[in-house]
Image (cartoon, rainbow, N blue to C red; front, side, top):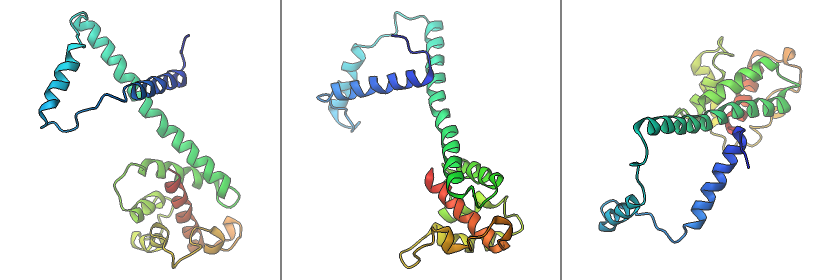
Length: 191
C-alpha cells in the first residue's frame, strides 16, 4: 500500500500512534524523574535502540526529513482554521457585512488565536485596523460585554439584539462598530 499524499501519511501516522498507545497499555511511563525505577526504565529502553548501524550523513538526512514532516503537520491547521473561520463568518454574516471586512476579521482572529492577550484585548486587536477612527479605549468599552458575557446580559451574541436589521450602508458608525466586534467574537470563539 502506498501513501503519497499528505492526508494519507497523516492518517497513517495517527493510526500507528493509536496502535502503539493501545497496544502498550501495560507499559507504564515513569513520570517522576526522582523515582529510582526511572533509571531502570530508561536503561531498558536504551538497550533496544541503537544508531550504530547508521552513518552520520544518514542520521542527518533522516532527521531533517522527520522534522520537515512534523513542521508541515503543524503548518496546515492554521490555514484550515483561517478558511474555516471565514466560511463560518460568511455563512452567518455574509448578507449583512462586506466580504472584505469578514476576510480581515477572520485573518486577524486567526493570527490572535495563540496570543496570550485578555479576551477583550483580543477583540480589540481583531477589529482595530477596521475601526481605526475609534479610540482604543472606546473599543475596549464596547468589547467588554462580548468578551465577558454574563447571565445578566442575555442576547449579547445575537446581532439583531445589538443592531437594527438593516443593510450595512444604513447602519450608524456605532452599530457598525458593535457588529464588527460581535463578528470578531464569533471568529475568536470559532477558533
